[in-house]
Length: 268
Ligand code: ARG
Image (cartoon, rainbow, N blue to C red; front, side, top):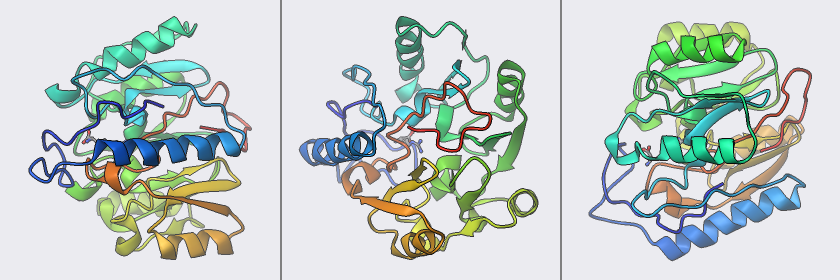
């Protein structure tokens, strides 16, 4: 995670960002601290990266890389405003002893557009991540990568429209995907949780599940009910200030996966 010490809404690279309205950094920091404490209380380990001045979106660590089986596929950001974050996150991994690190040739925004399940990686494209990065990631990770086409600019990263509930099931907002990708999702996950638009626009799908607990936007009431009905522990968090930059709980969380196959509870 990356503390939002330099958080601000200074530019608009997604429809949620309104620089003229700004955002309150102190509130963002308070909300982020609550999220970090939630992970610690749930027993997950949290590592921190130094926030860099001039990178107001660096708090959204999900975008920093994709880590599967300890292999680090580096991000290459679509917009120049965030470009320096890619090398910063890669440096963190090399400095922390990760040896299998891949500097990506194609534009991709890490776990914003790549979500890992037990036997495959789901990958979004359409707004940020180049489809060529899907192939590159598959080759580097040695895991099947399934392309999903995003079509609604409000859901510009895959992690704003879908999250893995476990290693083998997901929750998603169907309308965020092209007709073909919706069919793919229906085929792969016949038992998926389908979210309403109302829950999707509160960033309810930008959630983090460890297979038991789901850390989810406090406002996504309908989705929370359905998750409880399915037996999940729901842990609501308020990240409304960070949403002014277009982010929620998952965006603030890069899940470092040392090992994936067979794991039922991959922690953040
Ligand atoms: N302002 C950031 C951007 O548009 C928000 C990133 C949100 N991150 C995410 N994983 N969806 O790039």
